[in-house]
Image (cartoon, rainbow, N blue to C red; front, side, top):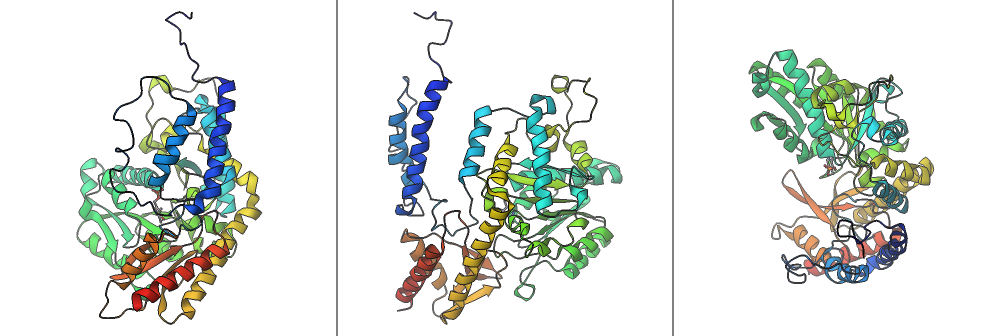
Amino acid sequence: MVSASRKTFLPLDPVTFSNESKAVIDFIADYYENVEKYPVQSTVEPGYLSAMLPESAPYCPEPLQDILEDVSNCIIPGLTHWQSPNFFAYFHANASTAGFFGEMLCSGFNVVGFNWISSPAATELESIVLDWMGKMLKLPSSFLFSGTGGGVLHGSSCEAAVCVLAAARDKALKELGGWENITKLVVYASDQAHFTFQKAAKLVGIPPSNFRLIETSFSTGFSLSPENLRFVIEDNIRSGLVPLFLCATIGTTPSGAVDPIAELGKVAMEFKLWLHIDAAYAGSGCICPELRHYLDGVELANSISMNPHKWFLTNMDCCCLWIKEPKLLVDSLSTDPEILRNNASKSKAVVDCKDWQIALSRRFRALKLWVVIRRHGLANLMCHIRSDIAMAKRFEALVGEDERFEIVVPRKFALVCFRLKPKVEEEDLNCKLVEAINSSGRAFMSHAVLSGIYVIRCAIGTTLTQQHHVDALWKLIQDKAQSLLM
Ligand SMILES: *Cc1c(COP(=O)(O)O)cnc(C)c1O
């Protein structure tokens, strides 16, 4: 008998860990073997799960086998299969074997690297990987630790947006002489920018009426016009407002549009705006020399973020944020409680990641990105991007050859926006087409509305998508269109 004061079970016994982990890994491998057999978009009804699971937690431990069986029977039917090669909706969330290994190591060590001493390797690897990544994107040295800037990993672009907005806000309020001036600060973005920035601006206290969405149109391919921006800024200044922040996007969510960074950068400099570049999706593509020009002018920005968890073979979650003046981020976000002080005898200045993000606790995400980069190498990472772009190009050509369809906005990355040509008598034709495709279970696509026009988005780029999947998708689209048009 073990005394009552001691645990009578071992929640982390290396032997059990080794044995049972293998079963979980086999389970996941089996999932990938079969992922194409499931309907891509889940077909369950809201509330389906409570009908399948007990109302309260079990008192006694349950065997792993039973749990995995429930995952098969109850959870998998309620999944929309983001890793299916027939997933063409939103922007993809790339998973990879290397990304999974990185996650395992991160989860396995389970360290909490909020400051340097809480896990020196976590902080230092993060700095190294951010510099690696920044160099792959050919960011100027003003964004790198090896230069005069630095970077940090966040869980999402939304968190990165909150942090850089807070830094910009605090810098401006200091210059303006007090918090009461917060009602004067204005944030700008195009009407194609991600809603995450609107949310972030609200969270840092910018009055919602001071978030200015600048209208875009077909004529500029939905990119933000520097002239229109200047016009709104000058008008705001005349009204006594203070321009604070501009979010420019490389690869917008609705259509993959690219804002002209170099020209916007000049306007931002002139009016002393903080320029942030949101390259959440398309940033990964910019590792390829032929796409890097979209980042031209990045030297004029104050900060830039992108999500390796979208198109860079890195399992959720991982967002890179680089900033030219990390001090401004730290000024805004640092707290210095005694309990978290680094050992004062350490002479060299160290990064305390807690001061670069919202939360205190943080995962060792750098390990994941490091494994992804090393296991693939720049060569295969570029190959991944290029093969998706080649498939998107081919899909775009197929759509263009069918006179019933049209490409709505020219493709820049691996997102193709198209539609059935409008017929006056059938306004919601394209919406019906998307529904017909998605309810078939054989593919999943989403849509956007551009200048009032409903467009179908085909985002190519799950890790498993191959040419034959894209060809099958096009055949499916043609078949469904045929029945709708009949
Ligand atoms: C996906 C996306 C975001 C949001 O990213 P999160 O990491 O989910 O916050 C922001 N901007 C763009 C352009 C995106 O495509």
